[in-house]
Image (cartoon, rainbow, N blue to C red; front, side, top):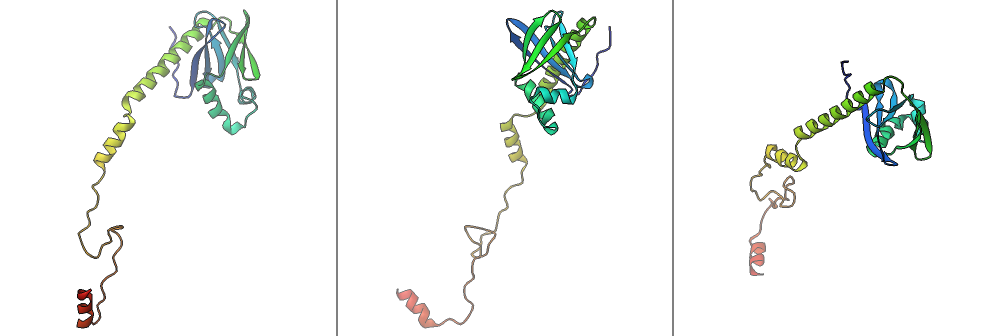
Length: 186
């Protein structure tokens, strides 16, 4: 049995679609620049696609947007597959089309690799979801670790609205007894 190739996240993309009562796996293997479709049983159709061909298929987009749009096309299951004949299928992305030729001789090995990659990708997603905390738990944990609020000493010289600002102090000049008596009488 041949050794399975390894891949990193983003090197392999795949999704399942059904067209005309046929189930297709649409896949992309970055290391080989290989865009393909398989039925998962006996048929595999592939084409080596350079960056320029992928840009054309996605609607002649800018080169800087290619990777994000390519990922989004797979995430949204945007490609549709049409069976042409026993040796070709047509993959459409809105108005653009590309024809993929049937692979000869290595179809079973390719299908096995695609299914292996798909299962491996699902396992990686499950592991990453198991290790990451839910959003609510993250907030709760961050509140637990945060330092307590700074407690300011009670003072007449602190503002109630903004404790970092000082209040205006009382005048320190001469005080007249008459002014105090007038204030007390009123």
